[in-house]
Length: 61
Image 1 (cartoon, one colour):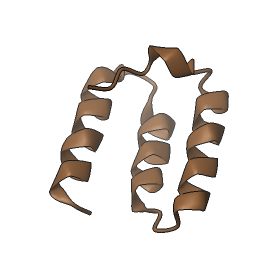
Image 2: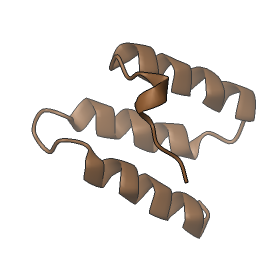
Image 3: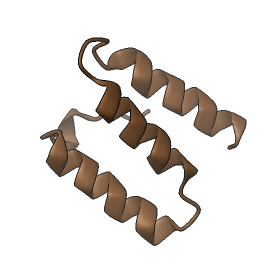
Image 4: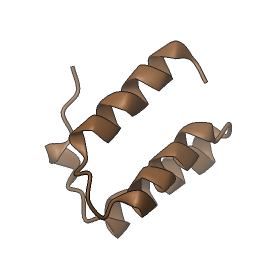
């Protein structure tokens, strides 16, 4: 995993609540290990649906 990915993953996990988020944390870590871009995008969409994350709530630089 590239350094920028590690930092991005760390930023995501520090924003997530600490309690009862083991499954979310595992899903995000798994997402970052996927090598296939198409599969990674599919899993990202599944994570958004599973945890009811709204796309416009994700802030990017």
